[in-house]
Image (cartoon, rainbow, N blue to C red):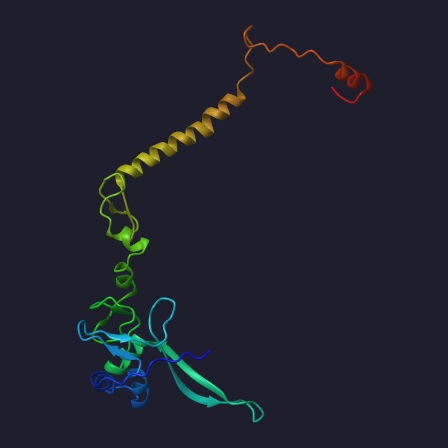
Length: 214
């Protein structure tokens, strides 16, 4: 089912800014799906969005068919709306863009997006990786220090030393104490350790006589 978006009169500011490096027909189509917020200055995208909340802009590229008997295929191109807006305004688009000014995923204002790296973009988020990177102490309150062999890792020296000590103790118990106890000769039972033998029942006697049981 085709989605019908509300018709919006293109904002002159949007048209003027995106017409610097963008195709006029695409810019006009793009601007009709943008609503300018006068308070924050965000260009709110009112068109289609992906599951992550970013605007998606689709435009026609060409009609193509391989043979004369085939029907014409409408070839379309698709891009995230804020990346198309940045490319139309600046003439180039970086690998990563971050909404540093407004932190809104549906904003397509090219001046609210700044080029950034994947690492910086990830550390600004609230995922577990970014939350761990912001920590300065471990869960027991000890200071985290840089790993001696990997500069990207951090660890707590006090907790790491305690864990190594506990690991050595467990390995000693598992590999030495249990092995030595298996190789020891059987201990002679004391009178209080002797287990009284169970008196066989009548059925057990019959089974033993027939060879069917103990």
